[in-house]
Length: 345
Length: 290
Image (cartoon, rainbow over all chains, first blue to last red; front, side, top):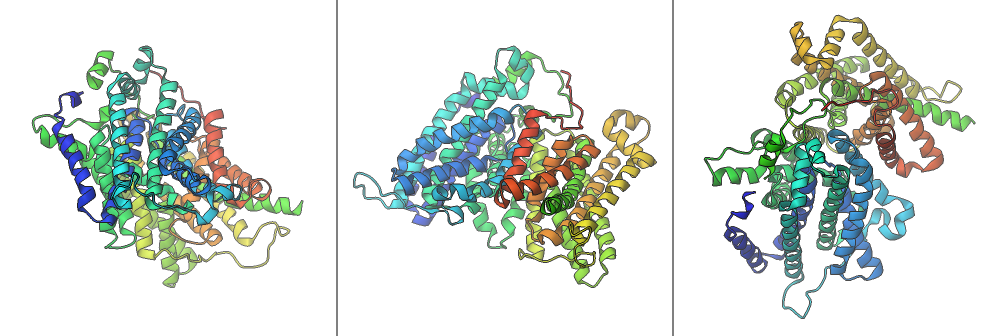
C-alpha cells in the first residue's frame, strides 16, 4: 500500500479546515456537513464489504435505519444521553449484521445483492409494524431533541454536534485505516481477489465474510445514529430502499477501496440533491442514475481514482476489474498466488 | 371454505403477474447471468405508455400491442447501448448499471407522468364475480393472459429456429458464434422479450394495485422470490414459483401475518430458498470448477 508513504500533511490540512468550518459557516450548512460526516462513515462501512471484500450489498439502508431507530428510541423512551447511544447502536447493528450476514454471505455476488435488496425494500414495512409501535412510534416516527454542548462551552447546538460527529468520524476512520492496512485487510482483499487461494492460505472465508458484514453493519449503524441525532426525527418512510441505493451511489461515485473516496461520496450525495431539486422533484433520482452509469463507464474508481490519476499522471489508473469478483457465470482466469500478493501488497 | 378458495384464486391471479415478471428475470439471467433490478421500473414505465395511449383514444387491445412493441424496442436499445460494453465487466459494475437504470426509469416516470396515483382500465367486462364467485373477471382474465404469454414463450423457445438460436447463445456463446449465430443480437432480443413480458405484467397488475411510479417495486420482490423458488435458471420453474408465491402471499396475508408484513414475507421466502435450497425447486445445482 502506498498509504504509508503518502504525506500526512493533506490529511492534517483537511482536518484543520473541517474544524475551522465549524466557526465559519451557517448553522444550516453545519447540519449538512454533519450529514456528510455521517454518510462518510456509512459509506466507509459499505466500502469494507463491497470494495475490500467484494461482497455487494444493496441493503445497508436497513442497518442505517436500525442505528437511527436505536438512537431515537433510547433517547426518547429511556433518556439515554446521545453519546451513549452510539456504542449501543454499534453493538445492535453488529449483531444484526452478523445474524443477517451469516446466511446471506454463503451466497455469491449476485444472490447477495438480491437478498440485501429484498431486505432494503422490506425495511419501512417492518418499521411500521404494529407490534413494534410502542417503541417505533409507527408511521408517526419519533421526534428527538438536539443535544446541548457540554461543559458550558460557548457553542451553538449545531456547532457542537458537528464537532462531536467530526471526532467520532476521525476515530472511526483511523480504526478502519489500521484494520484495512493490517492482516485482516489483507485477508479481505485476498478473499475478494481469489477466494480459493485465500482459503488455501488459511483464511476462514465464511467467518471473515460474516465478521466483515457485521463490522460494515456496525459502521453504518453508528452513521445512522449520528444521522438521526442530527435530523432530530426518524420515521419509516425516510428509510426506504432509496437510502441503500444512495449509499451505493455514494460509494461508486466516491471510489471504492479508498478512505478519502468515502468522504467524496458523502459530499456528493448530500449536496447533489440540493442542486438538482432546483430543476425538478424527480431530477435527483435521474441525475443520480445518469451519474452512476457515467462513473461506471468513465471513472470506475470514482473521485478517488481521479485524484490518484491527477496526482501521479504517469501511473496507469488501477483497473477496477482486478478489485472485484468476476461474475458467477464466467470462471475467473487462474491467478497465481504470487500475482495476488502483488495486487494486494 | 369459500373464503379460503377465494384467497387461493386471487393468489393465483396475482401469482400470474409474479410469474410473468419472474419469467422476464429468468430470461435475462439465463442469457447473461445478470438479474435486472430495473425490470419492475421498466414495466411501470411501459404501463404509463399504455395509459397515455388509451387516454389518447386508442382501443385497449391496440394500445396493448403498441405498448408491447415499444417496450420491446426499449429493451433492445438498452441492451445494445448500455449492457453491451458491460459483458465482461465485474458484478459490481453490472449491478451498478441496473441500479442506475432503476433510478432513471423511476424518476423519468415520475417526471413525465407525475406521482399521483392513477386508475388503469381493465379490458375485461365489469360483470359480477363468476367462477362461483371465487375470482373477479379481471383476475380470471389476467390469469388467462399470463398463461397465453407463457405458452407463447414456451412455443417460441421450443419450436422456432430463432428460439433455438437464443437458447444456444445463452447456453454456449462461443460454440454458437462458431455455427453462425449472432450472439450479441440474441442477447438484445432476450432483453426485448423480457421488457415486453414485463410490460404485459404491468398492464395486467395496474387495474388491481393502481398505477404510480413505485407500483412494481414490491412486485419485483415477489418475482425475485418466485424465480428463486422455482430455480432462477429454469423458466418453467420460475413460472410455477411465481404462482406459488402469489398463493403463499395471499394465504399468509389473510391468515398469518396480515397485510402489513407482506413484503417481509417475500424477504423470508428469498432467504429461506437461498439458505435451504439455493438452486430452487426445479433448478440445476451449479457446480463451479476451479
